[in-house]
Image (cartoon, rainbow, N blue to C red):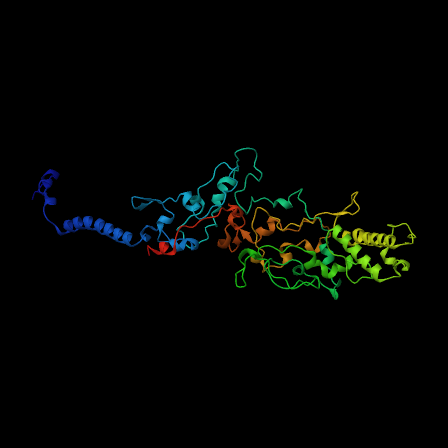
Length: 451
């Protein structure tokens, strides 16, 4: 039996070329869906737009901006009722007006939104990505001249330079003589007997209350130095740095004996400028001479005569003025050549009195970075300042180096069980001390109107 031969052409003639004009349930549903879905979307968008602006949000705002999460127009520019995705710098400057970083030297100034990315959740906007910093600092260029800083820094783990004060040539600007090794020895003579000093006896975070163990005995308990702070105010950044070193709070308890100039007086000389000390001595000896008629015949105590400072024997005074001059001269030499010189650099001039070199103890060492001692309070002081117990020279800079920081801080941070090593952990782009005052323009109901 012969098979039928069906060619492609014959088979094609059996197809109905007008099938699409005939009604079919699936084609009807497709038509209605293609019309209804856009209509429903437009109606839904219009309904949400009429009751608020949350429909535009691509994610939650940061904590600081959460209050106007439904007021897109606070930041975004409106055009014909719609909002542009890009936020202009002028919108940010309505609330934050601090000078840009090195604006007079850098090659370009990035836009605010290129570094501070919103709608990413409850993050800290100041914690910018390292790429925001390395876009300049990986190959630093300036408009004029050479950069003042290291030209190539692309990460903290490998390429961050040593801190400037620890590089060759760095020196301690302080001019107070201090031997840490001597102060940390056991059985030091204290105000009430032998003592073993600890770092916290002299170094304490600003904003903390309490007595200093070696302060002047007549001083009242110190209050934290926090301008405008009430008793229930959280310390915030007031505990980032150490309180300044002052004679009255950290030294007087032990070193008051170095300002004793004459056993006939219980009161020691004031810790002040030489002119003030000189006026104090004149007053004391004048009062003593007036109340002791036999002062001219009193012998000079041997401990008041510094070896090599006077031609012995001392001349015998014949009147009040000669006696006053001799007593003040002995006290001056005992104080300025021994007591004061124990800690201070004394500058001899042609003037009758020496000049005390400024102490110049740095309140902050890392001027281009932020550091919080309070955040590191779980560590002992010597964990970072490990050279302190053996330091005998005043000029020793006892700051921890960048290698010490890297032992805890790494670039990937929590992802590799370490503290964050991002640039924003220590560095700030804006100088907020120079922030311009801002005049607000919103009322609370205005921010809540779209809720």
